[in-house]
Length: 553
Image (tube, rainbow, N blue to C red; front, side):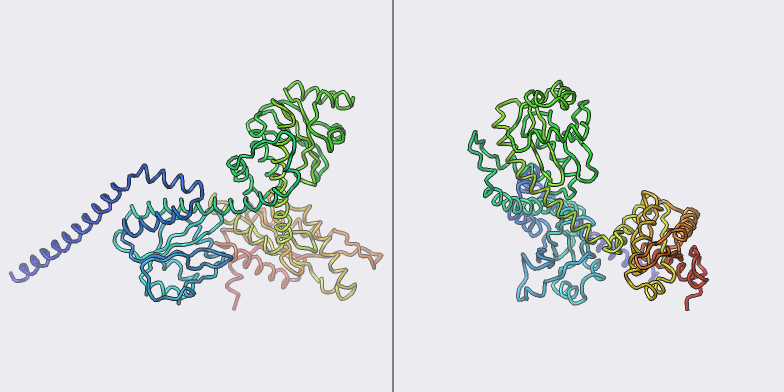
């Protein structure tokens, strides 16, 4: 009887506690709903849209802080802004007696990857493998146990840390914070672009090409910013050349725009059109385009009928262009490596069109220069200087990408690691310059032996490697056999030797996900197979098996 009474009392206490908990939750949810009701959501949405799109950081950041404190009761808030590779204190609320320097964090790639996952709030414990224990303990002592990032694409602008309570664990907090973070990220991103464009405009204002005396046209800052926002994020010169066509078409007020250019890579003629534009104009021959470029070089816009009368070789192609409604041509070199001519339908005075085109060309040329500089820097940072192949840095970048793709589509991925047998003997006998010549010629042979989708790189020293997307163990084994025979047959000519030199290689291969679950382990398994091949007599290939791991002491 006593046991039953005790159980009844315990049950009653549990019901009372649960009732209190539910009442508190209902009260908090009603409070949130009441505050949300007072927010005027359409007005709030319009506020975020307008202020984010014009880059009004202060207005959006102020709204974020206000909502965190009033709507969700966050008593403590800090915002660390990223500047030159450092996350440092930019804003705080509810903190007293602290040292600003304690909040400095060195930004690294691991933090970047973690913060760029999403905008959702997370517990700071997720940072424990990336930031120092001292920093986490300081956050914990201050009661700052939740964070959410502010980033756009690959650019991190900062991260918020807040004190959490019941309300910050609700779905409404998660969704609203994600929305606020996204809006603030957009504001930061646009402000970042605008600061770059202001510098660019100052530079261009000093350019005499901009100061056209005849028929000046009022420059529209909004239109210029819109054009640059579309183009400035493109870091590939080929893609940028295609992308300029749409804003160029808008500037000229016609869809009939063609950019005919001779590529510096293969010296062949190419036509660029605005997107979604249909015309059947054929690509001119190289000689026709070269002749056209000579006739318009250094001149103002030329009527096509006048050009047509100056050269019989242009007659056929220009008649085709004119029959499609095009009227004028102008030299339009955006890239020093590409000789270009712009052809368009001029609907007003050609002098006004020239003013528009000179302004646009100045902006676009600057962006093209930036894109080319980025390409050059990227190429140098990813290229092995001796062989011209990709280097180890590029290898691991692509390996991460291909592993991710293989996981997503549940495909195989093979990795082959190999080195030259007895390269040291070549160096000792003929000198290190001869050894370098061997590496260069082997690199050329390897380029010709891989598939288009394969990625080949110099791993380091006398080692090379190949990433083989969508290749299983059978495909990998066939490839290694082919490389073994190809290198053995390759004649290597040395300056100080009349006889050709022949080399052999040893290869090791491993396949994802059969042998490894990630990129680093895949490289390790292939390296183990390579060591096995070298220890077994060289000049052979071996595929990784689980027995290799068992033999490691």
